[in-house]
Length: 218
Image 1 (cartoon, rainbow, N blue to C red):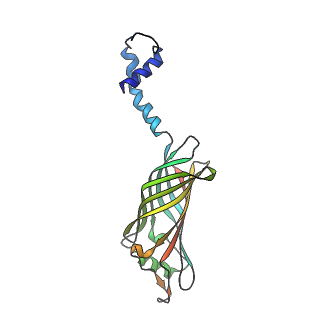
Image 2 (cartoon, rainbow, N blue to C red; image 1 turned 45 degrees about the vertical axis):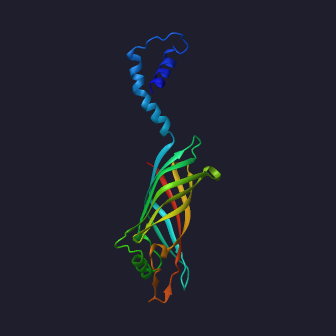
Image 3 (cartoon, rainbow, N blue to C red; image 1 turned 120 degrees about the vertical axis):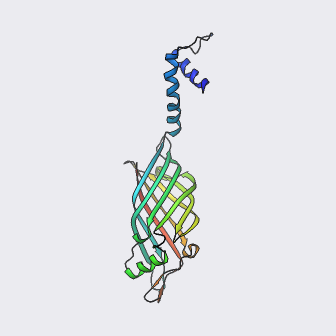
């Protein structure tokens, strides 16, 4: 640190190329000493920003013995900390958390909704959540980035390690659009596939989560 400070002082005072060392007055080096941590912090944290979102276009799709079905939610809380390069493209993701209320999922049939909430154990586990633990980011077309997250997905009170791939694209209005899909096995989370119409219509085990979020810079 001392070497760095004196190099900065030498450049500012013009004494860098002088053969003999001339003591620099304290009134010169003390203000610079206080500025060095700020300069270093700015250099390290440049291009990092926090983004949040409170809405989502989330669709859970599945099959049944009668027809395919969808449940949709527009509520979510999402926070993410991104790294950017000088071109504004995402190069890293330092933190990510996502949560949506289980009972915000709605289909076209109230009876199916109620059975789904029961299967999701929404009375004891009121939210579906995801928390990132590691990430890989690669460039994609159009200034976007492909983000592969490994993390903890919690549904119906069960938590499993799940990888989720999303396309993240910065927009001109300082927002980021995040889109992706993920196939999930309900039985992996100890969820009994719901049925309706007195059990005559049964849903399949696998569902597909499709999400579209717009995150705003905090």
